[in-house]
Every structure is written in C-alpha cells, then in structure tokens.
Length: 458
Image (cartoon, rainbow, N blue to C red; front, side, top):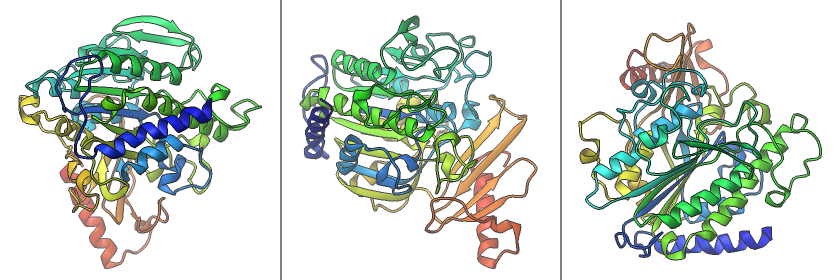
C-alpha cells in the first residue's frame, strides 16, 4: 500500500508540472473564482537542510520520494533562512515582519502568560481578505504556537483571521503524544487518538474539499519535532526496535519519512484540477535539533542557535505560477519573504490589505519563480533570538547577518564573530579571533553596518 500511495502521489505531482504560469479551474467545494490561484503552505517542525537529500548537506537522510518529486517540479531555494525557533518563524511568515516588530524572539511557553502574537498584527489571512475584491477562503491545520493558553485562549488562530482552525495550540508536551493529544477545533478542545501527522493530512483534505477556490491553507505538522517516537510502521521503512533515546537520529528520520508518505496521500487526495490551480510551498521552520544531528552537522550549532544549523532551512515552491521548473535558486531569502510572495501569487493588493502602511521586511520571491537565476533581491539576510518575548530590554539577545560569502554572529557580551561561508555549509574558524586581512576587515564593517540598519539597537 505504501508503494501505491507514492506512485499515485508522483502522478499527482505531474499535474503541477503541466500548470506552470497557467492554471486550471475547478473548486475545492463547488463554486469560486475561475483560475484564481490557491496556495498550500506546508511547514515541517524542526526540519533543517541536513535532513533532505536535495540540499546535499548530509548523506544519511530519510527517503522522501514525494518531496523529491515536488522539488523536481518547482524551485529549490538553496539559501533560505528563518529564526532559530518555531514561534518567531511562524510570526514572520504570517506577518512579513521580524521579531523586533512582533515581539517574538523565542518559543512561546504555551502555559505561561507571556507575550504572544498581538491581535493588531495584520496576518496573511487578514491581508488576503482585505486586499482582494473576491473572497479568499482560508484554514489553518496543525501546530499553531503563536499564543499561550492564558494570553488569548484557544481561539487565538481564529482571532488572527483564520476562518477554520484544527490542530494543537503548541507542542506535544505535558502528557500529549503523537498518538493521544489535545486537539482544538475553532476554539473547542477535544482529544484525538489518530497519529498526528495522519490526522493533520486528513484535516487538510477535508478543509480543501470544503473551501471554494481560491483558498489559502496553512498546514503545519507537529512532526518531526520531539517527543521522539516511532511512527506507524506503514509510514516508514526504519527498524525502530529500541527506545527513541537510544537511536534518536533514526527515530527522527522515520518521522520525516512519515511526513513524506502522508504528503503523497495529500497530493493524491486533491482533485487534479484543484491541484493544477495551486501553488505549493514547503519549508522547515528552523534547523534540526541537537539530539538528532550527526556529523558533518555540528553539535551545539543547531536549532535554537544562529549558526547555519539553526537557521538555514528547506524551502521549495512548485505548481501554478512557477515557470522555473526544476531550477535551484542560490539567492539569499528569508521567512518574511513568504508573506508578500503569497499575497502576490493570490492576486491580492498588499498595500490595500495592510491598510495602515505598516512596514514589512519581506520581499516577494515571485521573480525567482519565473527565473531562479534572477538577480538577487536582497544583499543580506538577518535573524535574531531574544528573551523574554516582548520588547526591550531583553535578558539575552543574539543576532546574525550574512551575505552570499560572509557571516557575522553577535552574542551577548562577546566580540562579533566573522565567518567565511564560501563553499561550506557550516561555520568554521571565527576569523575575528585573529588578525584580519583587509578583505575580512571590510567584510566585518559592512556586515556590522547591515545589521545596524536591519535591526534597531544593533
């Protein structure tokens, strides 16, 4: 059955290959605007580039035939960057704004009354609705993690503009597992005993079927984030005989493979005419966690840090409006860029949708979808991590900025670190620990100026 689902899904992805800049009609639930683009945004939790073969970082990766097929029909972004943890990245994607705007610099503790994504932020579903003459329907499925139980309550996703939410408000902790967990549907909590990745694909298919076109669906898997676990055997090919703590890498890879298998079922379950009318975006929200990485990944330079292993993630865009099929884009991009990209893909007016002229840091990636070798739209990418969530003063603060070659890392009470990233996936020697050449001195000064320009107070 597993092989059949993969074969069907790859055939379904062939529909994406035929659409390119055009698009089919059809509707998810009957009616809708003909030929208006749907967008399916899929987020995997804690998935770095070291876990997928297409990025070539690591030889020991899980088999992902459905993602490989998606990549073959889209644009792969080689240098995509996020925040080093989930909540700040999700806020950046949904608002187009960095953490110093949203006040999110670390994961939200879902059980404490701490700062969350404020209701006056203009989110993607709100901007799409306000910026479009025709209705754009939406839904959010899976992990939310942008508000705590005590701050805005269980209907926080709905208050942020989503017509439909089914999923978890945060991580699967405090007694929740992948096989029994609290699931919220539009503010009402219940218990699910279906494997979370499977349930989230079930819910995504149901929501797609219920929505007239055009629609925006935000599908966020809890997986492969911990707790480490053995997925149902039908979803992976790993021999997981011992406890996860003994073989964390293998258990993590099995969860990644389970996502891929269920993605095959997702793509095969969408009506071909609807799929041909859909742009599919797949990304990780931050790098892989420390307990599962193996060399050449560097322990201690993973999720939660601003090293490459913490902030460089998979990103692929395929389907309708993508003409650069099978191309790789080497330009620097970051998570805030998805916000204006999706608005443009769906034909909404960004300025009208935002309404108040508030600044965003995102830049549309649409030019790369026409030509992956399009001249770079940004010279630098930045990321930050701070605590507590909210606004200055912070107890701790770190930031990074990089261009195509050089990277600066700023940490509390330490001298700025400088790395030469030419031809490498991970940071090597901190050049600023020794005497700098003139080229290195110029690079350091240039990056320091760029960081100050991008992030207030830096």
